[in-house]
Image 1 (tube, rainbow, N blue to C red):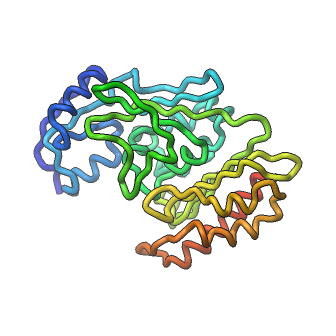
Image 2 (cartoon, rainbow, N blue to C red):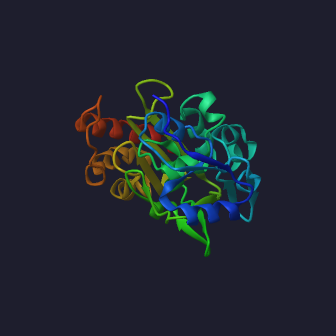
Length: 282
């Protein structure tokens, strides 16, 4: 199947993008890496009248470190994050997650911001940003605003982005001394979307974990911050992981998919919780 007919514009600036979005509204779509959009076009699940190519906007790309945070431009590719020494040093959770995203060919083209704006419930980056308490900068004709990752993802492919807004960058606070991260997921094949996945972060002080963050993906319409499980382990040694796994019953209510029942997903979530906590406590 081939994509429906559409007009195409290669944007030269963010201002031009915002003008085009305001003019064309929901009849326009942004083209960044295109690794999700091109597939939906070819399957005719998406039929915009206009594609706005933003891939050449250098102002929306790159990784910068300063003032206790890492700033990642929306057009930064998955591969750039995977290869970045700064990311590995300051945000190891992202470095741990990157190799799980699809395959190398897709990571070379797909973008960080594109994945976040799409908000696929089984994608890795949204859960990582929730665990890291990232803030997203959204630009529109009236200016910019910031939204916490925990408030950005509203539901299935639904976000806090307003009409004619663009996600331009992500600011992530650098965890302080003693923080450790763990990323685990289970998929049918390497590169597939996860059946269940977990992005975890905590401060380890002599084996006791505090400020625990457990962000699950693949178990709901958006990333799920497992607050009951987090409370069950917070301030306690990792040997209390069984209590955290049990508390997941209050946090997660996964539905079945084509390959796994809801009960299977819950059991896998408990297994991943134990593995992540063991890594955090090591």
